[in-house]
Length: 302
Image 1 (cartoon, rainbow, N blue to C red):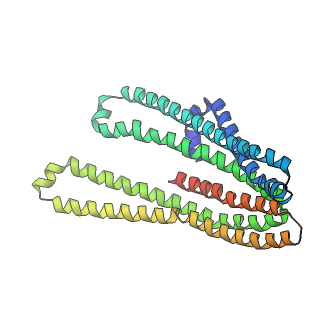
Image 2 (spheres, one colour):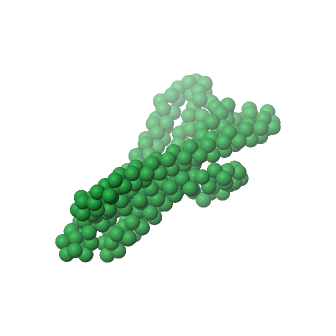
Image 3 (cartoon, rainbow, N blue to C red):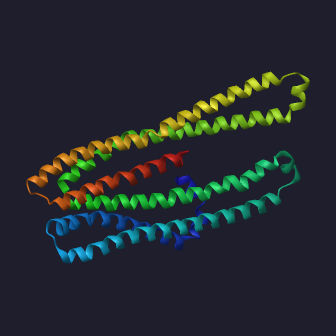
């Protein structure tokens, strides 16, 4: 990830103003999400328990405002992130074609046209995907985690210790999974390169292969390379996809403990019903951005 941003820092610096907007919109989404979970407390305590008619008139508008802020922030962040990505892709494509046109004919004789086109279209298109899927989402999900953790701690520091203690424990297996995915992704790329090389060799020497009746031999060699590519790819998926179910399982343990202990706290009168449900709502919502952030980091390694 660091290498990616270092490599394209020249282009990224040109969009610092847009990055500020993306950061601001991510902050709005995070605060709106946290604010929405906090509003559960006054909704239950003031309206349903205390039957406060004044709060009944105010709270629905506050809920609408919270979700309006979240929706507006997501739209703004997505728009400007894609604007940055598309503009960078445009500039890199222009620069690449300009550089390629200055190359000698020997270079074009040695390099396949399809490869050159792929470099300018597909490969560069991945930059936009990286910015759109990883930069914007990682900012938004990271700040949302901070906001929701704040609500959890504010509503009940005691229960927060129970609910949040699972997360550092989850980081240990998750970090190992990410490292494993990185290694497998590298092997997958190497295997794909071998397939490309094999196909290139076959099509460049197809006449010689037919003369020597080597079709079956070449096909057998390709099947072997293709099978290796499949095995590495499916192993990569198996390892990468385990992170989300693992987070779900650890999350269920934390929430089960919180429901039991929180129920006792409510019965004893240490916290209100609204505070507990605000806490549990924030805790439930907390695992979604954590899962997404884990998946983003895992996918970026690929």
